[in-house]
Image (cartoon, rainbow, N blue to C red; front, top):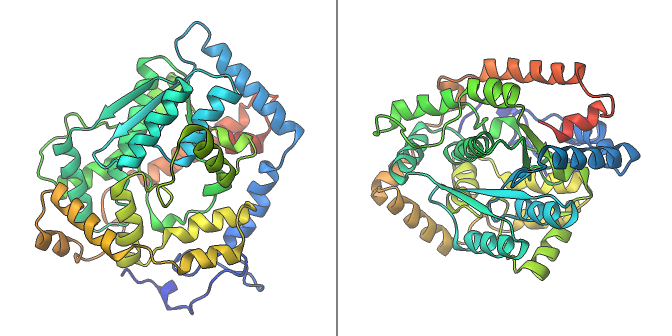
Length: 395
């Protein structure tokens, strides 16, 4: 496990959430309340509360999207994974908001059968068209093995980057200005920076692949470069990513109940577990190798948004991350799918741990441009939009 000076401090868990010192950047006040709670209460909670400004922002955004999509087959794009957030988003946009979304799904080779079934059921009943990108498995496999050999925390970068690249590729090809994301602060406001890395960084992705991969070039894998993302897609094409669920009263449990009752949707056991690799990565790789249990972040997000009690979260954490039989099955499935022998797979999982800073990246450039982009948006905002609402809606 990677150790830092912060690891030497005594163990502490937040008195309000279940975040703890497994996050090296966490801080606590004199009452034992962690920095994530203060950040949520000060910056996010006021925005998520019902308000006239929020209602007007929702009304204005829907009018804007419908106006731009007039005369076109679709007026927006949504990424669909089969999970609760994206499934509920599809329902709300079609049934409540009256939009005409095109659903885009990336098949990176790790879909669970349940995720595929959820997608089919939801989109069929909502009468939403689906565009699926199937990643060349030889390239995807090479990337996944390269990232495992690299020893970095975020093993989902190959999948996540391809998803984002596919969404922007579709938006440009079909001249659609709005990509509507299921990301939301009600269930995802807390995610320690140390536990992951930005999947948008193609320089980082390619540097790890060059060092550990066998395939010389990624010819068909969906890549989106820094210039393509910020200059071409965001600036020239004016494509916007919208966190739509931040504009409505989004409750995860209520959303699941509706989807199960009306659309035959079934729960898959954990956040982002619609991918078999993500389940293994979050429930075994991260906690075993790094000591990061992402359930703490997911559960704490629900606590600060008032959707879960701390007691219920602590009870959830008492449950094992993996059923032993399922772990054996998933490990066997993943190592076989990656064409690794059991011995090779276990040897890779014993490699020295690294941080994402150990490999070339565009982090400093991305950080500078992101901050500049946000400042420019703030300066040039339309008068009908509130600064804080812009922060949680358009990103």
